[in-house]
Amino acid sequence: MSVVGARPNFMKIAPIAKAIKKQKGIKHIIVHTGQHYDEKMSDSFFRQLGIPKPNINLEVGSGTHAIQTAEIMKRFEPVCEEHMPDVVLVVGDVNSTLACTIVAKKLWIPAVHVEAGLRSFDRHMPEEINRIVTDCLCDVFFTTSPEAITYLQNEGTPKNRIFYVGNVMVDTLMGNVEKAKRSKIAKILNVKKGEYALVTLHRPSNVDIQESLINLVKALMDIQNKIKVVFPVHPRTIKNIKRYINREELASMHNVMFLDPLGYIDFLNLTMNAKFVLTDSGGIQEETTVLGVPCLTARENTERPITITEGTNVLVGTKTQRIISETNKILRGKFKKGKQPKYWDGKASERIVAILMRLYKQGKLERCA
Ligand code: UD1
Image (cartoon, rainbow, N blue to C red; front, top):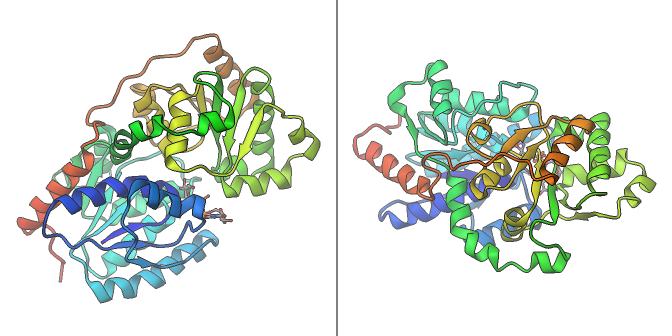
């Protein structure tokens, strides 16, 4: 039984579902918690990435962290009791990941975490709490980078339960690059390769706090004087922009295109062809590394340091001047070249399914009944 809930989960589960389907004899149940529910935040990803329709939708919707997590737990428990899966597989670090891991483990069901061992060491981030608790409870750990193995072992995870398999997001990216090249989005927006910046912002620490949001918008005001800016806006962010940012200021940003959230294929097309990306997302730091596109991450830390040490990512924080000066470097043609991390090769999902089958056959995924 696999669990998905929020937008970044969908591109992770798509290749795993495909790899499971190839392996005959596994019954795969997909549970969507309904943490994200808008067409543009959820359904479009299922369609575009060919993810099988979820067998069960818990339809939890939005809420505070406690309410959302509790509601997922309440609704996931009877589903587990009814189906009693051999394994519950969770991905990423969203509230759905945490909630379903707790439920599975209290029912003694083996739990598997894909993208385990990421640590920002910043407990102000809700995702960091989700990562720590999920990894503390799970039985099998699939990592995207060597440092994740070290972090897990430092926390006492047995070595023989950790597998460095690569990155399932990259499986999805590689499987969709050709389709993305054919997207018409650049034509629709009237932007050309290398002549625009792509921006996404949604971290609570950036967009829920007025001062941080104002700093970021000020940086955008400067950037848009030098290059077109394409900004697909997350629902959380648009609410706060309307609340905190002066209308005249917004209206004066003629060179910024504020868009609704985009589908996977169009977004990938825009990422591939951007001069650079300014973001606070986790996954986009990885995608730009794979594509060799400069990435400025508007955060003070990252749980994905491999995108800095090996990839194209630079942490620029959230101070206006720093963001502007790093942007200027890129516009002057100064930016480091990255390389592809090991195993980010499009085959992570196949490795995951092969390892799970082996563990299962060896009796190492037993319910601890
Ligand atoms: C969640 C994840 C975050 C991930 C992000 C990607 C957690 C703690 N956070 O944050 O790690 O990077 O998803 O988007 O799990 N909303 C809609 N439509 C939707 C979903 C949400 O309008 O389909 C609005 C609601 O007003 C909601 C707000 O967006 O209150 C935030 O949604 P929520 O799921 O709480 O967290 P995200 O900020 O999306």
